Image (tube, helix red, strand yellow):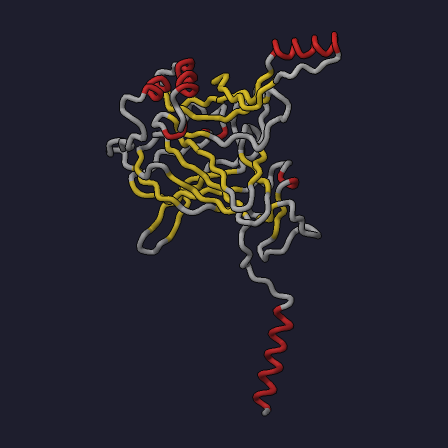
Length: 329
């Protein structure tokens, strides 16, 4: 009986202590996946990564993406590790500096991206793209010359240095406790130290021939040929008349997501950034579509009828079904 009583006292003691103890078992609300397009590369070759962000909650939440940021501290960093296979010991050999050094002739900023429950969004990172490194944040990544071998690369996302972060994120500490006084369900709960992705394996071999990617379109694809030669007027005509799946072509490196919303007044305009692979390197462009159309002559007739006779002529002065590519810039 004495032993049983001792066990009961210990049980109640553990229950009481558990009310003041915390475990780091909180499910992250934001997941990040790093994807490497090709595993084998040579030094100084352009390496394309993709970073996929997923809202793991049942709420609609916003996150911050690099956008046109060109000043301050980067919110997304790449880190490279060498691995000692027998001991499975990771040694960091390089990380991109957090402080950005870019062209600041105009001041850019991070972008807001709204994600519905379980929704994802992807962005590219182009390492060693020196031609665009100072003017585009997605190319402002470089790796030094690495010895031949295999490396593990990880992405690190920490937006809390941004002035806009408090409007989107709410930080919690190592024990999962909110740093602020109360929880805000309109903001995404994230570790104050940021979020890490998975590791991906990068192999460097300076003597290896460049990998030839499997073509996703015909070898005689007119659209890809026009992109390669930077014939933008023809590229525009191809998109309007022939091409349905823009991203499914060999010379399209990445097609960004469009804006979350556009103005409801007609005509409205919808743009998406795109990265083309030309004979002179990567080229960043914006595709802009016009949504809706105002029929000027019909509008003029309608106004004249109203001014002269106070009569609304039964004719459509606008069209909401109009969707037309108007520029590649």
